[in-house]
Image (cartoon, rainbow, N blue to C red; front, side, top):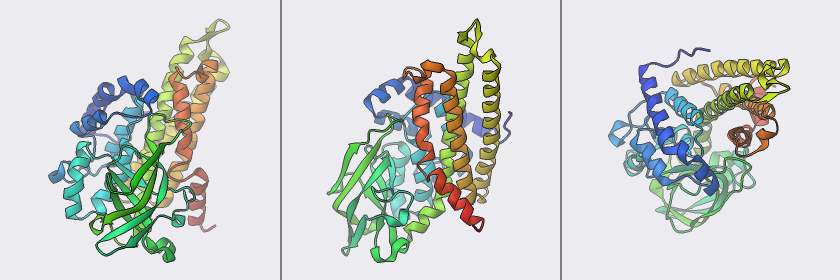
Length: 380
């Protein structure tokens, strides 16, 4: 189905992104999967190509382009080239809005130039062993010690956790106040008492950097408070729609990649004297997947435009997130089925896509949480 939401500047950006992924990422995807990490050189190359922080001010190296279609294009080209691992979505989809909206001029001068260049990789630390979707239940604390905070606690499931230089961390600055006592601190690599645990052994996304973080009396300067004191919970809530939109922008291109691989396979693989795609049942499956993908793409495109206009609500983003990730899983699982036994062999890309896609229904808020959020907004 033809999409009409892009213009010439988007097409130029798409060509740049495609060239970057084809040259700097796709050839190394198997290596990164084996080693369980992405090279820092790839991050710096992304910065050199202008693929990090384009929405940030030009005076710090950005382009001032606050248009989420660029985020969408980057995810589409990453998936279309079969690239893996590099956490540009965390950098652009999640962290950029915080850095743009909530940081002071002094903080921008300190952090943004190296963030945009790819030298400073970022992560956001919310989840804890006993607090995932229940953000108000976090236990990590920051105690006021005059000119600095003393942070104690731990985080888990942190994307870019091992490579990150900047960790935007949710902490309790007023534990007795519940959600009204949460603040955001930027914890920097090298701060004494800040250590990283193991790289988590995940079902999928092997090359993605996901880790545990530990804070043992970490002294964080008062100047590293991001946003308003004790308003962190509300800062996080206000930025969750763009994060959930980013998950959808990542998921549908993954499903599209799987479907494209499957359409090719269904024409090449024969059984009982004809290509497997020629059997009516399989032809119907392919037709259903294409239709659902096109419908979900239209839904996603409209949500991207709504965010650009400042009209994407938390409920809209929740609905988009659960619907697109469930469609993504349905399509990729069916694509694996159509590959037969070969779909279960790791050398086939569809097997990796299947593994990598499962987490989409979990992070950023589970499908069940998304549905509950929507249900409550409807008055139930």
